[in-house]
Image 1 (cartoon, rainbow, N blue to C red):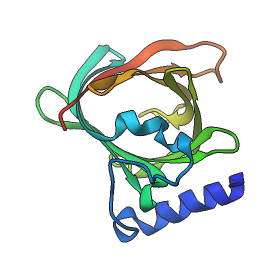
Image 2: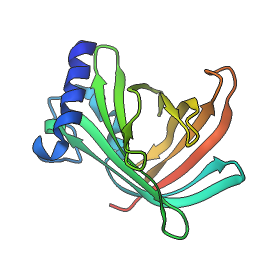
Image 3: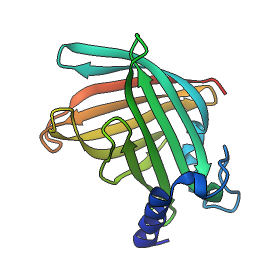
Image 4: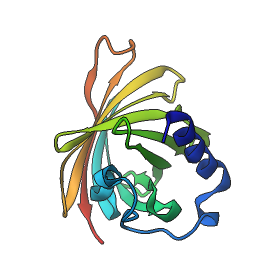
Length: 186
């Protein structure tokens, strides 16, 4: 599937809503490209513990990460929410992930439910036993940044996630800007 068709399929899903498309599944379609199973580690429900850098130090949080397949198993979708220790919602969003078997890459779109906005389309690729993604976004002060995201230590019990951040277009990085440990609950 060429990039235009790939992006068109993803945008169709985004603007029509996944509840109108069909049932969700925890497994990819068996006739879908094999690479679609690269996010299989994220299928199911997870409890997360995380930490993000803030101006004053760190924010520790807990939350949920739930992943599933849509469009007859051709799109992977995950919902993520975090709360601080008092139970206040700190972050809420959904990511749609579409696999391109020709390039062996992923195209993704994320909706931030707190800011009520889409971030730019971003891309990723599996490298060995890890998923590597690069995304552009803006912080709470409106400053643009690049995120270098990695899923790692992925197994049937959970996974780890980390994000490094660059405010100078990748010349320097704030390492471990965000870190998460996710444990499967279902």
